[in-house]
Image (cartoon, rainbow, N blue to C red; front, side):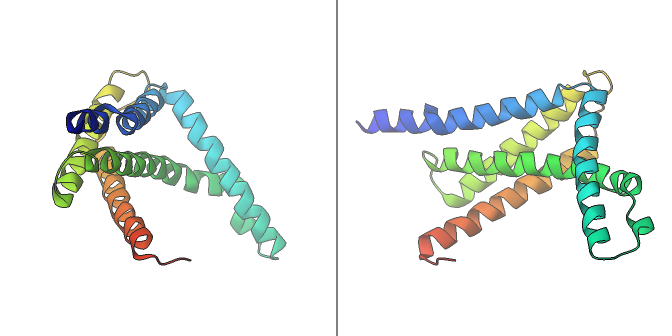
Length: 167
């Protein structure tokens, strides 16, 4: 029975969630440069429109909040935030999976961080093969920061859950 539980923990639904998320990251990285840029620009334009509308509703100078300028400002931020978010989620899913069968909290967090960083490197290497994309060390660093934040967030949420604090 114990061996069955261990196998279930290693190869059960938590692993499949990790693999599914990795597949999502891979598919987003497989988008050609123009498609990827278009998606992030559309999100940046949406955010710029929201900020511009709020600023105008508050009576602020519309020239300071023009949509094209805000879009240009938000576009790189949206791209980096997407990287960080992808890897924050990946790290949290990895911890959930690893904690089910790997002993030691510190080891679980270190292994989760290592796997997330290794996948970030592989993801950027994969982008070198995609037309219009480029693998960048800076993106690996953003991914690693996202993974670290995901692990921090996991720990905080876990502490809140186990302490019985309700908000």
